[in-house]
Amino acid sequence: MSSRARSYWAGALARLLPLALVLAAWQAASMSGLLPKAVLPSFGEVAASLGAMLRSGEIVPHTLASFARAGAGFGVAVAGGIVLGILMAQVRFVERAVEPVLLLIYPVPKPALIPLFMIWLGIGDFSKVTVIALACLVPVVIATFNGARGVDEMLLWSARARGTSERRILWRVVLPAALPQIAAGVRTAIAVAIIVLVSSEFISAETGLGYLIFSYGGVGADDAMLAVVIYLAALGYLLDRLYLAGLRRLMAWHAFAH
Amino acid sequence: MADPCLDLRAVTMRYGEGPDAVAALASIDLAIDDHEFVTIVGPSGCGKSTLLYLVGGFLRPTSGRIELRGRPVTGPGPDRGIVFQRYSLFPWLTVRGNIAYGLEEKGVPRAERDRIVEEHLRLVHLEGFENRYPRELSGGMQQRVALAQTLACQPDILLMDEPFGALDAQTRRILQDEVRRIWRRDTKTVLFVTHDVEEAVALGTCIVVMSARPGRIKEVIARDFDVADVDEFEANPAFAALRLRIWRSVKQEVEAARP
Ligand SMILES: Nc1ncnc2c1ncn2[C@@H]1O[C@H](COP(=O)(O)OP(=O)(O)O)[C@@H](O)[C@H]1O
Ligand SMILES: [Mg+2]
Image (cartoon, rainbow over all chains, first blue to last red):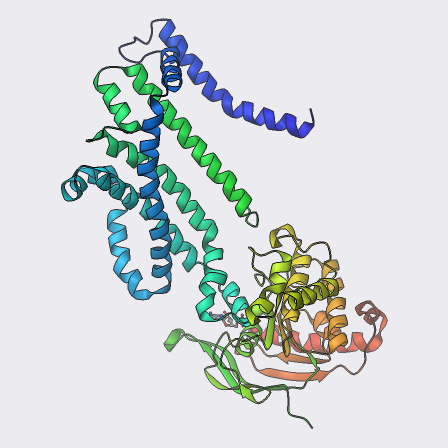
């Protein structure tokens, strides 16, 4: 093994070790009777439950339903957030109109808005997708606005001196220059989408991973409930890694911090 | 005598308004002939960059006129190429993309564009680096790309704002020779800002000394001798004398600027 490969595996091991220790401690506590099953099922039971769900495939339709909701809300938020953020950065009037609204929604825990949206938009998927979109919109708009507003003036000058018209400068300079910040905002939106998705599926859903957690919890199937939570965490982690790997490939010109 | 390439008349520049306004330039009169390599030297903060940005059309003068070949400057344009100390390049474009940028904006056809890019890659000795991104290059290489990017647009006049100010001494010396070589090759008009007296004398056929802020033209001195390489200036007594003379002139202004 080359020293580079060895250090890669050493790094991966070092990252996994704390997690493995926590899981081992959890299992030991359960087996020794320190942690009664009524409080928390053992890691082994949870893992077995997760294995059964994956083998039977029962988790698949719920995963797809959740993906569809989160994906729809997230997609709308990314597209709308970039457009709105750019408009805010370029048009004073839009900035003045949108900024107070944005600052108002910013600190509100978006899941708290779910009941309200259900009254307005019905209890179906539409209200869920809307809340997810609203929640994801905020980080994307803020990141896009900051990115587009913070473009180095020298870059704009450089472009103008090389013949770029004001009409084209958005495409040629502002957007690409803001891209690293936009990408960071979108990354936040991925996490937000998952959080709000699960909360929205707690209420009046018949499918989805949030529904699964809620219904298993309701019947006292704690091992199955925790299995879905762990599945969700793994899914979220994977999505984030995939996203970062994609960014590194597509934006090779940028030096990412991590 | 022919009309000057660039003509500044009674140009003043203030930043801001009211009591907080900063007077950066006080009445600049300067005429620059075609094919001159003009260096502008002066104490830090005397308005050298401001002067260059006005000629570039990035800023508008508070009063006065700036004319390029008899036409008033109203905004930036590809007839004036600019190289900044940093941030001239687009980080998201490769070396090739950066050099081709101005040509794309001008609508130069693909084949022609590729030919010009190749030519300029060779000119600044960056063959083999065309697919690198700016962040993968050293500071000196980035400035070579910036130079190629600017020259590829075929500007009438080349504006440079301390382009080598952030480079180490060896790289700076090599790039100074390259700029001299490029200027000799197609004798463009160059306006080159620096705070380094030696650089001003080694590059400029015409050296403009500015006063402390608010900047005025203190003196304009022609260098009437030349050598093939910047290195050869070292042993040249005329060079040493001129450098000393200009240094004393600049030093006076540096001291005047001290509170
Ligand atoms: N955007 C600005 N707003 C206010 N003052 C400025 C601005 N840019 C430059 N100045 C001031 O104008 C003076 C000249 O600046 P500059 O042209 O950058 O000088 P130099 O390039 O010779 O160091 C300085 O005192 C500087 O602080
Ligand atoms: Mg300056």
